[in-house]
Amino acid sequence: MIVIEAARAKTLPAASALGKRDLNRFLACATKALGLTGEFSVLLTGDERLRALNLQFRGKDKATDVLSFPALPEAANGGQGGDLAISLETASVQAAAYGHTLQMEVKILILHGLLHLAGYDHERDQGQMRRRESRLRKQFALPAGLVERSKAERRKAERSKTSDPERPQPQRAAKP
Image (cartoon, rainbow, N blue to C red; front, side, top):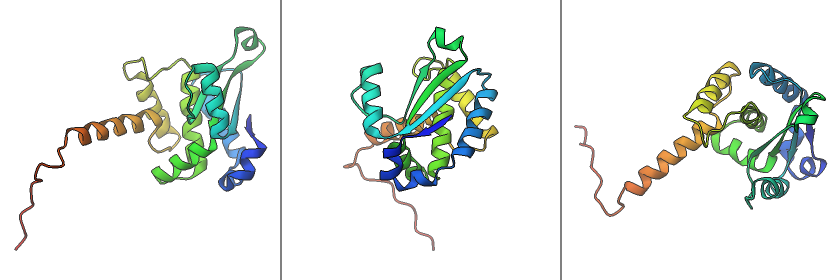
């Protein structure tokens, strides 16, 4: 079930363009593709709420794009699968940076969060989450996922660290 926090919908114009029916369908298809069972809810909110949740549950005092909360064992027996919280503010910035819609970015974040609920952890695994996310992205016709984007950004940062701005750059030969 997709829930858009009322305050976010009013302050972020793109939030009103989100298709909840489409997002709910995507949520159902993605949970099925991952073999997840139970009810899943997705809170679409803002940076302030995500920062508070990130601090409370992960000890990190910063906003983030998506957080995953597995159901407690006693709730799982009652049909709960878990919850996701997504910052529409961060998602909106990321959508603009990667050249796609907010709707598409929210789907990318839902998929990423569900992978965490399915037990994947890109910070500790040997690329399993990235590979699974990539396959599912293709299945759902989604652009680059979070793990791929962060890996590309790290490579870009490493390249910029090793380049010396004082060093002369090679020149291309002029065409006759």
